[in-house]
Image 1 (cartoon, rainbow, N blue to C red):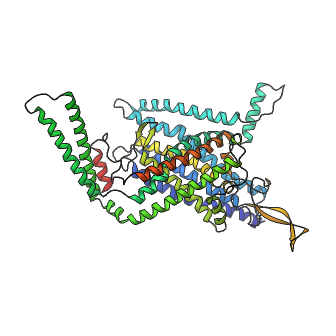
Image 2: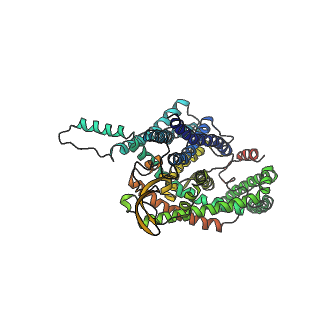
Length: 543
């Protein structure tokens, strides 16, 4: 009895130890990443802490998926039997631990998206007004944030009450109906309400993933392979451009040497040339910083490693896209249709990742390492896509993400987008390996008649079979991730079409990235709308 009590605690401790190590690594990474991109001149303590916290929550939530799969898999032996300690009570306790972890993390995400990040963002937007005081800033920020809170409350109410099947009684009063609603909500522990709210955010995350991640998966590897232009050669070209523009400026100014005023057309051309000249001179200062910096020399020495990483990343991207295409094709051919959310029972068209994961399950912990690698790759390519494209609202670019020069509001936007993309990551992983995400490496026993010398015998044997949708509920434990993913069919249908859009955007981005030449060594660092004081921040970064 003592051994049966110690065993589940040790298995649970193993899973959460892995999660704890991932937590420490995530916190360190978030601090370095935010500090790397935040503006040295406009940095704010509260916005920095908020950005680090939001990014950490996003990554911690993604790290919970491998732990969830690990725990349900570790309850059973490879022969399909439950381990001695894994009776129904203990199993329920372990799964409740994962479920409560999801409750906590998803609740924090709702708090960040609908309350904390909007408040901090609007607070610093108002702070830029010269005549604004602290009380006015807080009052205005609270007013805007209240709108987000109302949206969150509406989503929770819709998820909590609309989908529920409440038994109807002809003689029941309105108050009794309300009591039934709250009893049903309490019995489900708020799973429906939280699932609907998170699924709504995941839908927005799907749009962000299609926009940024799909492009980042093609742009990041090819940029690593192609590299950047030579700083010295680029500076020489920039010097020639400066001389050419200066000649044009002198030519126009020479028209008014005798005191005659310039025509409207010449004044407009002169103004444009002077703005162009200021931009080119800023580029020259930045290129000079880059040319002399030790960091760029180190990057040049690491060029072969970058090419290897770029080739590896493009292979991973192609593996990901091929697997996603085959998974979506399987749903198109064998699912029950849009009314079921394109859910399929079992796998008819297998894909490379779905084939690889069961093989890696035989050697602990290779399958969990692969899942974690896929999640981190998805996140890093999302960061690369946002960094390359900037933050847009339709055709209007709101912010640019640049090393050492990103405004506090842009960092908050960046972390909120990553929060939403990470929510969508779990469904992407499920699309690639649905059976693995649902059941991990679990097996169950089925009865089978034995054959001797090719002849069937009456002897019945128990043969292990991989858990699938046909397995008895008491024999296979579903991950908590799956319960959150497929609570509502219409979200699953939207995710299905989003996967096709993701594949299309990736292919378009791959063609565009292949056709583009090498990036400038200061790509995105100098624009015409930048101020001259931003050069100071650039020099600090490269030194």
